[in-house]
Amino acid sequence: METLSIKTENKFRTLISKQTYLKGEAICTMPSENIMDKPNRYTVQIARDRHTHVGKLAALNHSCDPNVILDTDKMLMIARRDIEKGEELSFFYPSTEWEMQAPFICLCGAANCIHVVAGARFLPLSTLENHYLNPHIRDLMTELLKNTRLHLKKLQEG
Ligand SMILES: [Zn+2]
Image 1 (cartoon, protein in one colour):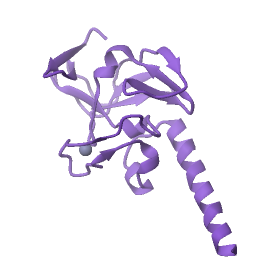
Image 2 (cartoon, helix red, strand yellow):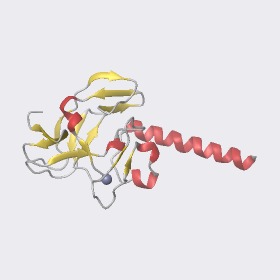
Image 3 (tube, protein in one colour):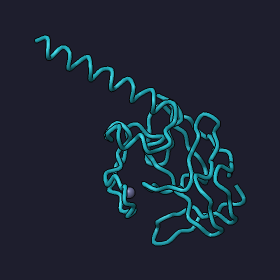
């Protein structure tokens, strides 16, 4: 955690790496303070009905082409690609969040930008497939697809 610093500019916080990391390297453990059953704009979802405050990592911004992943199974932040010293760290919010309490418009500029960041449940499978997803997001997505299929079947049967 001491290899990370928070930069604040116009009340906008960013998390900066103070050293280089190689792809796949664990950067730090995810702090877990204050577990709640409902999300807010500062929490990270770590299981179907568990949301936690993550200390310094709350300064992590979203990107559609992120350089870190949050592994909620191992509770680790891991480099998704090589990271330079001084680089801002970001992760793909829908990789942990199913339904966000405070959706926003993404201006990351990535070619694959999803534009509306509201949680995994609002994204097509074809988009989610290109990202690292935590087990609770995979489970919830499988459930949603199963329910949709059942619903369609009922409609067809009249
Ligand atoms: Zn984006």
